Length: 310
Ligand code: NDP
Image 1 (cartoon, protein in one colour):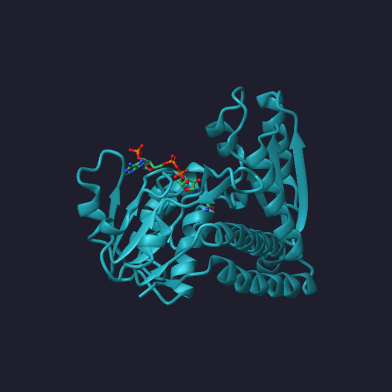
Image 2 (tube, rainbow, N blue to C red):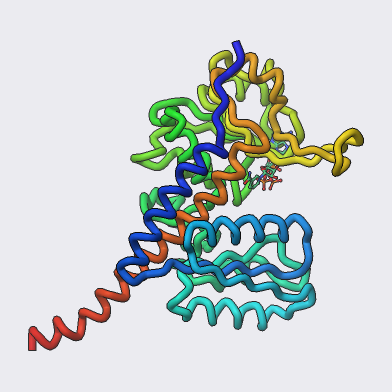
């Protein structure tokens, strides 16, 4: 029997509606969450991602500042811009779109972002907090989107054996750390596989939940999946398709048609993890805004309390 489809599009739609309501309620109290997107150069895929993220933010009622810099932007200029955004009270989330042109060091750019405005969760302080199991950290959007998707589809990872294929800093590694965390969305037994894993199929077949982020088109085949497993496909790969209008189509890392016959539930590509990633960016912006706002309110109250104590 074909597996249930876990529609990221539908789950993200519901989540975005909730975020829109939350933003409206904050606005009524005088707080407008603000997001800045920083795009350097003309990478076509990055342009598409930034446009989609910006559109989603505006639809949610978030104040959006789109910043596009030329390909040859010097590092000091980018760092100066980020410093300005860090200090800007209208901006609560800063997203520096990766990859950056060669003259810009990604590590330096990511470290320049105020950790409290780091809605992508790439600042080393937030990476460390996640590794330490901090339940409140802003973690990368794609793996947090996968967790939210599993929970909302009714597949709580708690107590289950989850195999993650991939160990990148953007997806696989933070995915494993989120699953290991105590509490909501965590408490899983986690195995991480990668390109040096021996007999990958034997490992993936152990998974009750299999999460694949390897960037290899359709490489997880039916014989690599335990019957009844839940499969989340993070991969987005372009494969040539002369029959299609664009000359290519998007496929995941999972051979969808055949794995669907073995799994009990599966997320599609497109329409799976991608929309969840965007929804989580919006959610992180709102969370960052709420936290920064309450922090500034309490620092304003401090002199009053001090005066009362005097
Ligand atoms: P990376 O290329 O950075 O990492 C891929 C990981 O997969 C590496 O850890 C690599 O192992 C592992 N891997 C590669 N080949 C194999 C193999 N044959 N067997 C086992 N493991 C393997 O990719 P990302 O993590 O950035 O992205 C993964 C996929 O997810 C891509 O398709 C990307 O487009 C997609 N993606 C989707 C997003 C979304 O929003 N939907 C967001 C981000 C990414 P090793 O470390 O040993 O090299």
